[in-house]
Image (cartoon, rainbow, N blue to C red; front, side):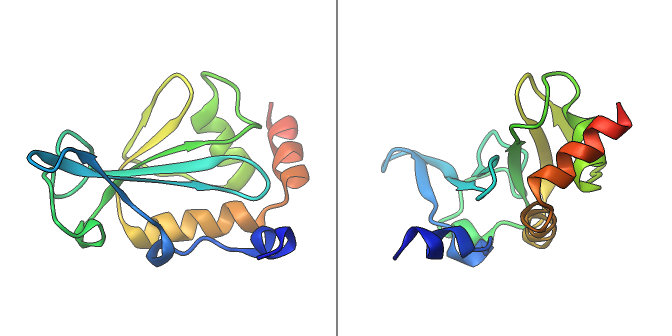
Length: 136
C-alpha cells in the first residue's frame, strides 16, 4: 500500500484492530488507536474501569454498546479543548470529561464515533484553524 493510499483511508470502526488489556488470566478490556491523516487521534478503550457500556470485559471488542474515546488534535490548546473542538469541527457532546491533554467522550456509541471521525476527516486543518482563530 502506497502512502497516497494510506492518506486516502477513512475511519471505519469495523476495521479497527483492538488489543487486549490485562493478561490472559485476568482480561480487563480492549484498546485501539486511530490517527487522523491531518493530525490528531482517537484512543478508543472499553472494559473494566472505563467509561464504556458495559463496564466489564467482553470477549468481543465490537460487542460494547458504547466506548470511552480520548480525542486530541494539534490545533487544541491545553484547557481550551472542549471549546476548540466545538469551534473547529462543530462537535459538541454532553457526556465528556476534559483531561489535561485530551477530550474524553464518555459512553459514546460506534455510530457517534464514526460521525465525529467523518466530520474531523472532512474538515481541512486550515479551515478548523481559521474557525478557532475567529472564535477566540
